[in-house]
Amino acid sequence: MENCLPRRSVLYVPGVNTRAIEKARAIACDVIIFDWEDAVAPSMKSAARKTVADAFGTGTFLAREKIIRINSLGTREFEADLQAAVACGPDAILLPKVNSAHDIQRYAYARRQLKREDNTALWIMVETAAAISNLNSIIEVAPGAGIKLGCLVLGTNDLAKETGVSTANGRQYFIPWLMSIVLTARMNNVTVVDGVWNDFRNTEGFDTEARQSLEMGFDGKTLIHPLQVAPANAVFTPSDEAVADAKKIIAAFDRPEYATAGVIDLDGRMVERLHLEQAQRLIARMEAITTQPQTA
Image (cartoon, rainbow, N blue to C red; front, side, top):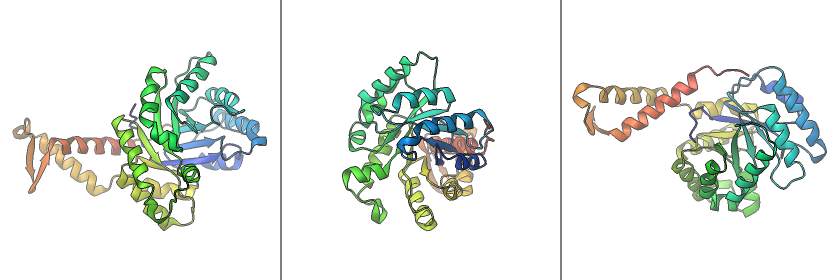
């Protein structure tokens, strides 16, 4: 399920806002999510589907991946959204309000009812207490249901609203949930991106939370404003020092005398093969980041 594409900066764009969509074409984020759910009023849902379809049909985007967030299962908009999203040909469809493995099976059934050959990946929102509780079974059921699961996206605003738990003070009361989500994602080799920082003009606060996300093990962060793209990319890009150290570790283990060694002395520190694996992943990540994305 793991995808090597960088997902450092995942920018939400209102699916009905033509001006915002046109501006987004030139934004160097890794991912754009065209939102048909929270960002679109009920009376504008149909217009949003047409707006995004037109955008997909004309012009290019710098973003490496283009995702469409549809409305949730059981809503009056779900079927029309799903059909329109698949027709657009996005890299993935983002499904909100996923609560259980049964929701993935319901989604898979709806996809089959379209009777259209389609391998569009599914991203899922983790934004309810039920989703956190059932996350492992949600991920595990996807392959058997014929669904290619691409990424987990945290919805911290919705989770705070449902539970009444505050996101203030460094999200200290959220941390156990955040870490459990990261651990489940890693156990299943699925990428996972953190929720949004709401006060987009508070750049210092954003930088602090983004660095917290990185230290927790998230692959990137969802964003609500273009001003957050460059800072997110900077935080989630390996530093020059980290890259140089990774290359040094790889080069050391490539020496003939260390071909079968499990642990070596590198500049006075013990380095094991697990560090070699970490170094190789970091270099692969950096190569993915620096590879010129194809525009489409």
